[in-house]
Length: 398
Image (tube, rainbow, N blue to C red; front, side, top):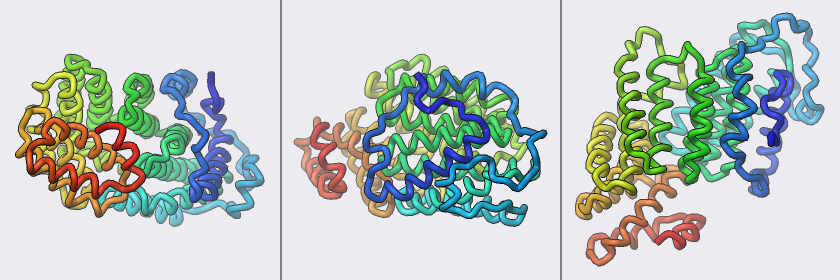
């Protein structure tokens, strides 16, 4: 079963990208894209893409070097008058990716999502032309980076099937540009999405492909990051031993990265604070199955918070929520209350549904302490601050 005929032929990727972003821009204002769509299973994506991701990228060296658009769909070309671009324009696009990425890390995906999708739509138009190899590669790199961001921002605001489609588009774009580590990282985002949505077995399918498909040139730090996602999936299945083993590998890989090769731009966000943040999340998730893991989760969350830079606002909120949740699980409501309030204070400034989803998970843990005066206040504050769209979902989990 392969609904999207994965993987696409190279000349189809630019067209799929242009069509899908165009549809997203037109329809998602009214929430129509993805309304009827379901998330594809991890194996549905991983199976067909396995051989393709492991083969050499077809940067078709013998393609005719004309300025004719490569059979891009007329719909795509109407919206954007495609033309070849030079290195200065590509540099400006690469810079815009950095700006969007920084904005996403501090404020969440809601506010800039349309701008990123619009930019990606334009890049799709540019890719309809054949550029010299070195420029074509960079352009595919920009497309992959923007598609990952569009996916992450869509996931952040709860547009799940849309997000998954962007992650798959990103993997295709990275592979067209000959960057297998980037393709692996894009698939790891789809895996993180699956764990968040309670489908860890799908996440492990995707992680198997992400790890093996990202190739030999993947830096140790990138491999460490991939392992932390795998460990989180194992934790949510209650597989503590496997999780600890995987996190041990992640730590070794992280420490072994000599930083003699500068990390690609998309890995610069994964630093020591993130490493601890992911370990905190994995142990906090495991603590639902094994209460002893809660103490270790607290230790990692505190280390993450000490190391976080102030621009990473959303990550800090996640650390506070992991910490508060771990304290609730460890029967320490006073500490939990303190950290939960620190999360709440910061939350108004971000437009991230994922933070509310995690807060809702934490809210569920407050139930057993509802008799405590302080915790009762906290519960009421959380209920008051929840966006209307989240209240329905919360009602089912109290």
